[in-house]
Image 1 (spheres, one colour):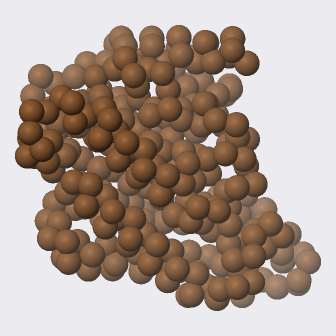
Image 2: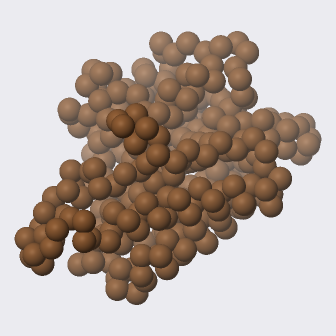
Image 3: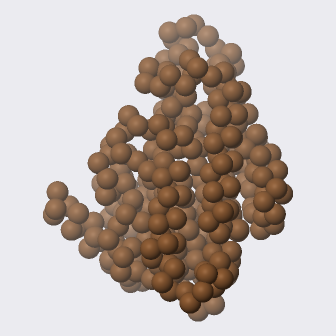
Length: 290
């Protein structure tokens, strides 16, 4: 185990320490990333969980697995490059201690969700609330010493970009697994969407109170396109003799994504956040393929 961790740290030192070009005048001072496996860049390598991507063929574009759940860079990596910033290292990696934290960190954790219990069948993961706590720890223990005054720190956080991609696991690794989770037995589809929205609203407000102002948020994607969900639909159809059009789960996820978009807009008006960008992934993908 120690050899594996040493290997991971060595690889990350090579990747995050060399070969990354940064703009001397980036568009933002830092980029902080929150979310799930879509933007996790290695945090789950350092916790006891089944939700890991530290083995081939993951990372084949890099030549080695990095912990990202894809063959190469994630959308968060491309975001950092666009901003003229280096790729943000994983918060849980020892590399984050030796890197310049002033340029940002990645807190995302595969299997994480808006709800703390989401993804628990995989083992350890850092929920969105837990990631916000890590961000708060970063501010108080690691960033504050770099600033002479609290006002300087406030301005730095206000200019930094906060990227958030969360919510899919609350369906595919919670609500849509009735054998493991009771949520679908307790809540109707709309009630569950409202629970997620209420919880997420409190989490976004917490980020705002910590100093976040420029946020980029992604809605829940078209979950029905995932191979795992297509397989589950096939099993459900076989067991209950229904057609896909009669199933409610895909509609519930779409409902939640639309509700979240509306809540984001209302919440940002209440908080006077004028630099937030909200992306409804379902509509975006639909426009691409239609």
